Structure formats: structure tokens, C-alpha cells
Image (cartoon, rainbow over all chains, first blue to last red; front, side, top):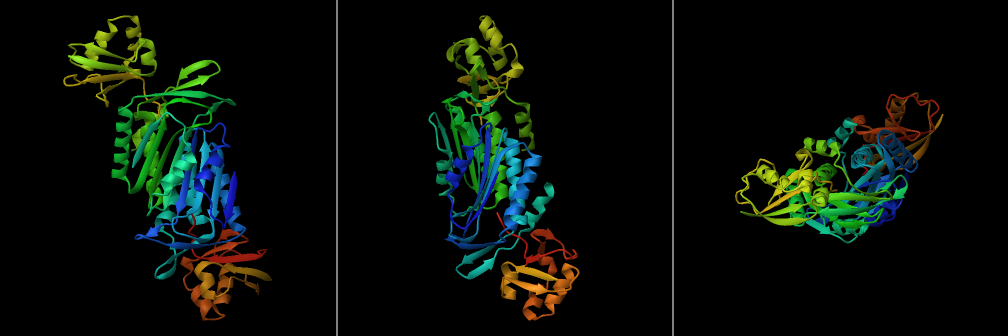
Length: 146
Length: 146
Length: 83
Length: 83
């Protein structure tokens, strides 16, 4: 299992292929890629702040919990911080398992926890200035199902 | 939305990147990649038979249903047939949406239907000969949740 | 009535051919199955357990009691194992 | 007791600095917040709505009534928006 927290851009496809190449025994690989969205047709930039040290520990703990709950062959989390351009990948979760249900469940679990429990804060840089992204109630509610 | 049914191998990472490059407005891309599993440490080959004509129609109909149920920006299904080597991708589903819940749900829906309602039949070619893969009860049961 | 009948996976292997053009007066899929089983042991064996078979009529999943009127292509196969 | 106090996102912006070393006798996080709010208007504003804030003690999420005994690093920030 691997956690990568980095400022530099990453290639989601290359990350998926690299991950899938190391999961002998797995029949299922689920990935989630978060992209910088455009707002109303105009690509926004994004600035992501995080809490070095806590970030890595928090994500590693989520992965340990996922590995305890589902039969996983491997898992990977990549998350960027700093300045991101519109359309760029923000982060990626990849999970491999023998059958698909485990990989889907673990990927959703990791995403729900990353959204609300990993110390990242997003600021959208739009034409009208910078705005901190507000946490969504749905994201907090999503945690209740686990 | 695109359905690709082909004999030749495909690069899952390149397919993910190509898909993600065309989904302006999406913040979430979920992918599922099915791999030829090894059985007990030994990589098996696989032979996949399908029903040309019905396959494409059945998958397109599943994608239409998914698009009617969830707010999707785009979706892609690639599925191989013929002879596959151990470790190779069998198929891929990719779904893009604004928020992650739609992409996860639609990807799981498509996978559940592809497993049991798309006319493919897998034969595992192992050291002890060839065996048609039996349908799993869990796969049939999985359809009930939709 | 002329029907294109298609077999997949182990149904194809048991019967020994992938498709055939059949002249039949069967009213339903079940009638057609009865007709085919009467042909010889390989057909009889292939259709011995209908619960383990699926049928498609003109490339849409159907049932064994479906009428054949207007149908041009019938396919028999085991439960699908895609994905 | 010396505490490293760290601020993130709009908490950092309102207070105007990312971190500071504080000498305090606060027993709990809530005590510390009271002490900080008394400093000046920017602190007072940053901590005006505790429901919109989260706190981490030595890099673990905690609560505002948690004791500070043995803690070396306290971080204040809005709800997280990762992923």
C-alpha cells in the first residue's frame, strides 16, 4: 500500500498502469480520479493547502482500516497540493481485489474519508477571485454508511 | 458515450487518460479494470466468446439506462474477446460525473449488468485444461439492488 | 418458418456447431427445444437442464415460453460471464 | 507549557500567520481558544464560530473539550475538503 502526497502533476493513466502491474492475483482494479472542474465553461485553477505530517498519517490510517474491512490485494492514494491548473488530476485512489465488490467498496470508503478527514483545503481561483471550497453536507453524511 | 468490443489488447492507462481528456465539467472519473487473474500463483490464459451484434446493443442499452439514472458527463466501455494472456486487461468501464457519487454508482451498475447481462462467456485455460467460468450467484444477486 | 439458431459456449461445444438454419413449425421457444432434443443425444444433453440455459430472441434476452412468431434469430447459451 | 499552534486555510488568513509558539496555562482546547480570542480582533473573528472549525492535537483530530496535557502541537482549521 502506498501514499503519495506531492506538489507536482501526475499522469493518472501511468499511475493506474503502474499500480495494475503489481497486483498479481487481483481480478478487479477500481480507480477514482478527481479533476479540477471548470465552472460554467471556464476552467478554474485551484490552490490546495495541506497539513504535512498529519496528511500522510491520516491517509495511511484510512488505508489500514480499508484493508481490515475488505479483502484487498493492494491500494494506492496519490494526492496533490499547491497550485493546480484546470482539468488537471487533483488526486487518485486505486484499489485492487480478487472480486469487484471489495475494490468498489474500499475505493468509496477511501474517497469518503479523504473528502472529510484528510487535512486538505481547496481554494478555487476563479475570474472573480479566490474562494475556499466549502465542505458539503453530503460529504459528511456519506461517512455514516461505514 | 462509447462502446468498444475488440479482440486486440488495450492499454488501460491510455484509455483512462483519453477518456478523462474529454470530460470537461467533470470532477470525478471512476474506472473499473477487469484483469485475467492468476490461479494459485500461476497465470492463466483466457478465451472469451461473445455474441457479435447483441453484445454492442446490450452494452449500449445498459449505458442508456445508467445515463437516465445518474448525472453523467460521459461513459466508456471497452471489452475484449478472443484469447487473452494472464495479467492482461479483459475490460474497462470508465464513468465521469460532476460529483463522485454518480460516477461510483453508475460504474457499479454497469459492472453488475456487464457481468450477467452482456453476452460474453469466459473460458479459463489452465494447466489442467479448459473450463467454462461458471456464473456466480453473487453476480445475479447484485442486480437486485438496482 | 425458417430460423437462424445460434449456440454459444458449452452449448455450442455439446451440439458441435455454432449455428444452423432450421425449418420449423414450433410456436414457442419451448416447442423448438423439444424439437431439437428429439434430434439426437448431443442436442438432448445440451438442453437437459433448462435452468442453466438462457435464450435470446433477435438479440434480446427472452424466456422459454416466448412465442416465435416474427422471430428470425434464436440463440441458446449458458448464463453470461462478462466483465 | 509551550505549544506549537498551527492555522490552516481561512483560519490562517484571518489570523495572518501560519503558526506560532505559544506559552500558555490553558487546560483544554477551549481554554486556549478563549485565550487566543482575547488577544485581538483577528483572533476573535477567526474563532467566532467554533462549529465551523476543527482541531487536531498532535496531528490527530480532537475536540474542543480535549485536555492539553502532554500535547505539543495544536492545529485549527475549517472542515477538510480533500479528494
